[in-house]
Length: 329
Image (cartoon, rainbow, N blue to C red; front, side, top):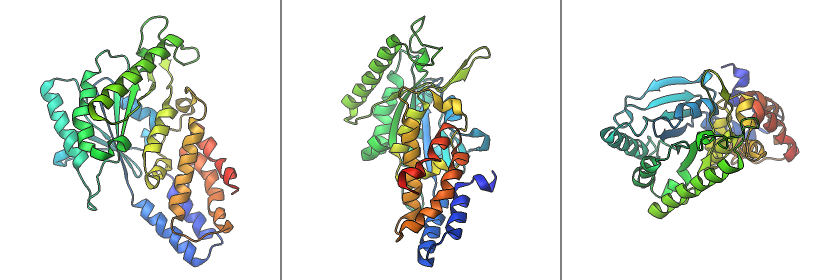
């Protein structure tokens, strides 16, 4: 990865060149050093065939990913992808047999309970992917209710996201999907919203935890036709909002997919803007935390704002690059 596209390198350069007093400059550089050492860990799980891999590929820039298999006892069998400071944990799928599902449940429990050297949980966020085309959601919902939520404890509502993939296959026939506009038909939208409410109620009734799923399409190509992603920006926004601010900014360091088409089609038009604003606020707040600053500190983020479009890419970058004007920078 070239240095000019690295968020931390860009910020460091701007801090060193800005007209700041040395106390402020030192504080900003210290904050940046801590950011460089921070990691964001997201665990992705779900049923076999639900589209975990396609979701990872759609959300993130896998061309820069480093792949490895963990040899730790509590994570054996989990594939890890490292994208700069982001680590994606791709766990084995469910539904391959009773014994395999039991082993998978034990693996998830151990992984979610693992702590780092500072006694903090290693996994920051869990993304559970359901298959929108399946009529049997019992297995993944049992996993959520009986394994994930108990393992996450009081943090479950803030560290767990449920997402229903393959929304374009939820219904069959002519009313399944509006392929021309890449959006649900009125009939399929009603069905998908009913599915969302059903999953929400089943989890709430069993655990008391309020989780509202989001439905989306990761996108796919069957060799003949290509299905563009849908509501991927909505899923990303939900992920960003679940993360603490000092972790959010790690998603801005060239981890997201640069493909414009991945972020284009959604059920609302403002998810990219909301996500961009959250990332931009995270970058500013985390970098300047504890520093005494005035108007001159804005010079640090002026050129950086322009660079962020290259760092993130696609629709998000284009939006984020202009957000500095909202703050008068």
